Length: 122
Image 1: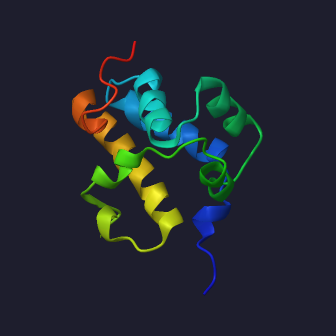
Image 2: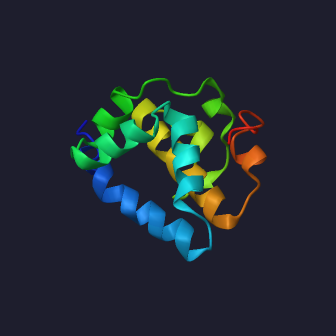
Image 3: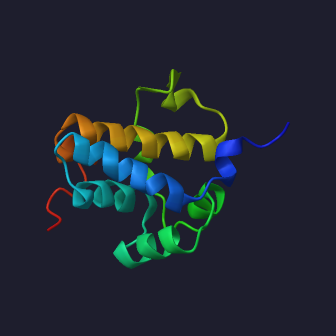
């Protein structure tokens, strides 16, 4: 089985599209960064580095400091697939991130997006 083409895409090429998506719906880059850091454990400097160094999505998730244990609480449909039913662990992580970005863009409450955790972050 060949690897999905998306695995080789750079995080730095996808991130600006996420920013555009949330800003188009009157939400902020800060909200986007918050959900990505919640999911992956990267801090702001780590995100900036991942954007700048051209690492692939595969490397982005492989090098993630700490995937959030509550990520499994992310459910729903993204790209026509239920995220909780995706068998490939890397694809599931990518779709978790896509789902979180969609939730920010739709204006879902941050407490819901973060699955009830880290709500007091400044």
